[in-house]
Length: 135
Image 1 (cartoon, one colour):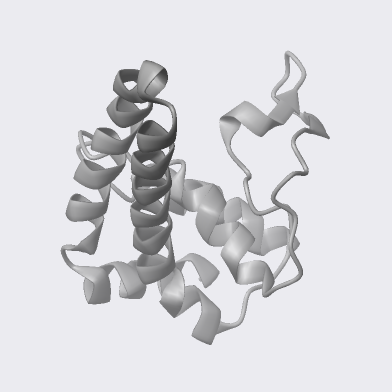
Image 2 (image 1 turned 180 degrees about the vertical axis):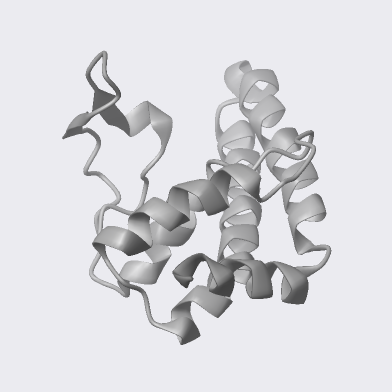
């Protein structure tokens, strides 16, 4: 799996069609659901009126093309939240290793912490909403 699908690593044309993928430095062999969780976590915003509206809209399109087992769908809220925590921890580690860039790196981490905190609230309810995308 790519392991880092984010807006920064995807190329699209003017119509919004995906035309390329960048940055294969994090490629690993693992369950595809983790790639999905990473992509969805990049769509979560703590300041959104509905934290899960954008990720769910994206997921609806995804499952039309590639069905995802219910067991994996139900894990997505937890996996997305874990990805946000992972990114924040990596940013903290990078800030310690490169103090000259610490303020910049930690500014991203603070957004991830806030979004992770918002995402962990209501994980079960969110899992129910995610399972509804199949319908």
